[in-house]
Image (cartoon, rainbow, N blue to C red):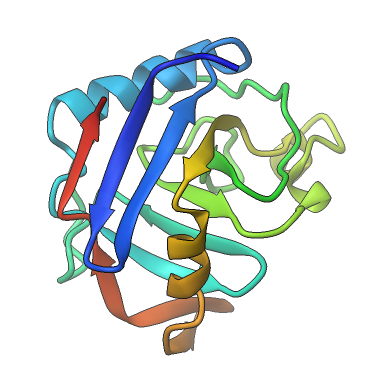
Amino acid sequence: MSGPTFVISTDLGDITVRLREDAAPQHASYMRNLIEAGKYNGAVFYRAEKGFVLQGGLQDASGAKRPAGLPNPPLEFRLPNKRGTVTMARWEDPNSGAGEFFINLGDSPHLDRTGDSGWGLGFTVFGEVVSGLEVADKASLLPTVERGGLKMLTQPIVMNKVAMQ
């Protein structure tokens, strides 16, 4: 599988992700534009659940949100949410991703398309980890606190630099 890659550099190590332009061209382009604009430099991973997800996006360690400055891409469900895939997070509105993403730390078929509205529309996989999945696994073992039914890291992990290769 070929495609452009980007590297997320953290104090725990680097995670390299290949964009899946073949399966999610609009999401891949959206992410590339955000990365090239430097939107993820200094952003954080703030949610971690062992065997499920490591999630981050356009906010800093204080929790302050950063605007994406781009319209959200429409849902592109073509790939299953399997371990090592990278997926656009969203709310019930299928086009509410706004730069939030997660790394699947296990197979998550419940995140695949199962219906025609709301959560049933699934979550768009736009990339796959090609190296550094062990970094995400390690992050999922860090202390968390439950907030709104989600496990949030007590100390968010800073994405020191996120750059296309």
